Length: 453
Image 1 (cartoon, helix red, strand yellow):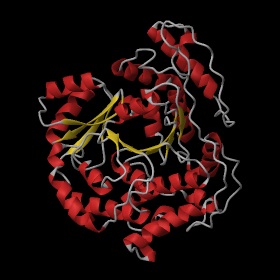
Image 2 (image 1 turned 30 degrees about the vertical axis):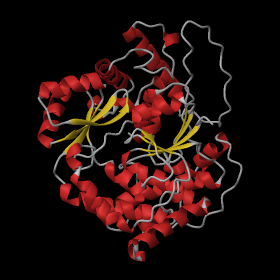
Image 3 (image 1 turned 180 degrees about the horizontal axis):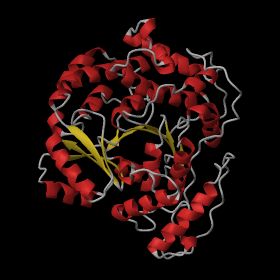
Image 4 (image 1 turned 60 degrees about the vertical axis):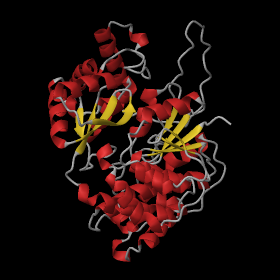
């Protein structure tokens, strides 16, 4: 059977304090996941994961932070599963692959948390050995940058979208590339890991990692997992811990994974964490996809989860949750939150054939932020004039790179002008343009910046 529904499990950085706070009141499985991780890690009540996630007054450590990142993805997936949403494929991005393996049943949820802890320990001595740099450019441009910088030890660590590439390697060579990219006006961002993840120089970590994780029970895979690090589907009897450990030296081919699954029929992608980074990357990589990010807004977790459940054919109600560890402060009642559902992008028509209009799929009602349509119209007019296209061609959903041919350098200049015209004062080099690949995405960013000042 062709895959249709894909659960995406993000890597590190896809977590914020307070995540799942609202969802925990509605879905009991959230608390069950956190409790299972607490038991596995033998955390005292004063340092429990629940207190760290909901309260935030527990001293932050890498072990707790990464366990929370892992727990967020696992708990979100468990909510959807309990409500009858069954994914056809699970895809983990780098660190997120352990959450995918836990949901696949290859390790228990508690043992997956142990693997996360062992990973922190195995990488501790590598802090400062190198780093990672995200650049808003395609592979051809990255090759020119690396050549200009004479950076012979850098490798492509991740390819997340057609216009987002991550380099890994020594800090001095990354600095040289960053300097050139900045001078050219390309968006550049240093990533959090203080080591060169997904680089061959990390190979010695693998044996250390596997020795630490010898206590983890391996199980057969109960669900289908596709690995962007290994570039294939996992077999039922593979060692999940060994495959995860090998990922510290292997590149993440997320673009290739998305294109392969899309070619096989995948059309619905759900990001199981607090950001929209992965679903945005999917939308910028392939056409005709439905994207969901239910935890993107902490105030709409419950409604957004229920919207995803309804959109993906869920049929059962989850067991009700209890009170979270920390109650929100008293105050006036909030207005009913709206579901967070990404737009459905229209598939491309076959070349040389007359396309028939596709029927509009049912979707949850949404409320447009105040003034958003005015922003969209201004942006469409701006981009049409700059590109010499009719305004009707520059639709809200058109991919700026794939459909309209806007390269990263031109996109930076146009984004700068778009922000200024809409009263948003920010250096565009600090904006990850690969996450805003359509006029609609840019309009959302403008509206968000206006509302937050």
